[in-house]
Length: 348
Image 1 (tube, rainbow, N blue to C red):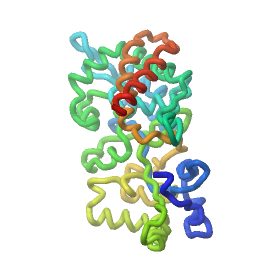
Image 2 (spheres, helix red, strand yellow; image 1 turned 90 degrees about the vertical axis):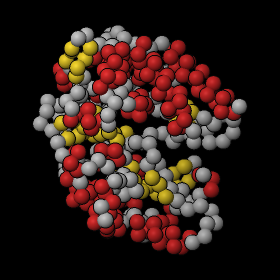
Image 3 (cartoon, one colour; image 1 turned 90 degrees about the horizontal axis):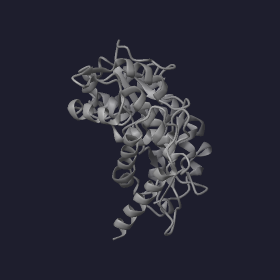
Image 4 (cartoon, rainbow, N blue to C red; image 1 turned 120 degrees about the vertical axis):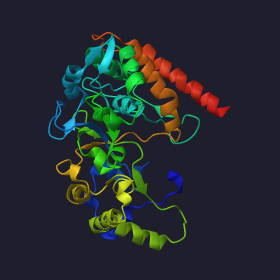
């Protein structure tokens, strides 16, 4: 798609779109191969939800890291008949969160930094930091081993109790923390969120932006270009987005979807000043400093669900020692082998 889009720099500044209004991390991701071809529209963030008034750590301000969750999560655990009746948290419960943690890293781990290897040719595919990907899995495995004892105990607890949506886990008192993407959290009816609080998940003070941030661009030679430009100039203003939220609220569309194009606005002032009027839980919870994922290959979702998540979950389950600091390079080699096999199967 990127080769079919025109440059869009001229809209910034003198073109009617305010460059300074955007989150800089989002804005810079619209530059691909040296050309600005996209402008950001919306994005989502990973949230850690917990019951209001409970014993969950509040973290520093309005964020939580895995390290800050470790103590309260372990203290929440309760055994019954050789298994857990309550478990504070496990990063292995939801694949999307586990892969995001591996990608962005934890304390003591830089993260795998999954990204596209090349834009063209046979070498196109997935790249990652081979020296740290196994260590990232090991860091998550250590977190689980110290707090919950073993992957088997986590898996047994999940199989026995965690079959409902994550917000139900909290309401039933089975877990202390639950991961939900911001679009998932704020699409819940207010009555289901009423007794829940949340913090943004961060590593090293940065919140990793979820996959699927929405961007806008212009295809080469597309009809209606002037009208599309006028629409985009209007859309990317605080006044227009306030009007969209007001209309969506009046029509009750916000009961089934979140925000602007399914997420937070790419315009900082809209999130800080307008969103709290329609989502009271966001008062004081404006998005923190953002960390963007790498530009990913077009088959990323297939790779994530079909290769990376199963490999990471299996590898983490084998690292049971609380004293593990890193895994051997064999784990990274195994991931490379699985990805190669997946690619060959897709070709066939």
